[in-house]
Image 1 (cartoon, rainbow, N blue to C red):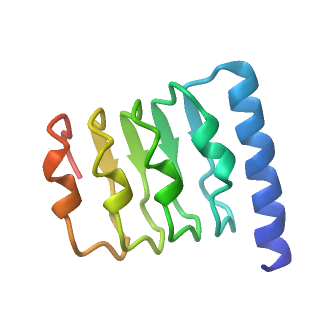
Image 2 (image 1 turned 90 degrees about the vertical axis):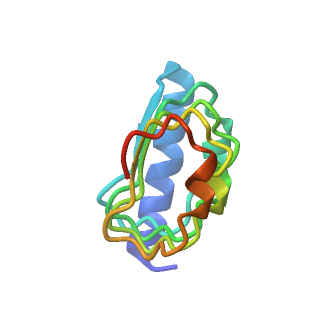
Length: 116
């Protein structure tokens, strides 16, 4: 892991702890060298918005338990597999522009989704 990625990871862990402590329903980790999503993200209960825009995150499996999510941005990331979001049935907005996603099948159960 590069120095920038390590710093971004540490900052993400700190930000996640702050969101949990403050009871916030929104987490923004965008515009960073973050390449791995800290597992602590799964500890955020009631989160409605997660912004990972312009990061180097390619694996989003750790968000599969965030069932209260209504807005998710994975734009400008190397994400290619979105199977982890297939059970996030509260999603209303999903941004996948400039990703590597080719298979949209996991979106078929997301009946509240307004746009991709």
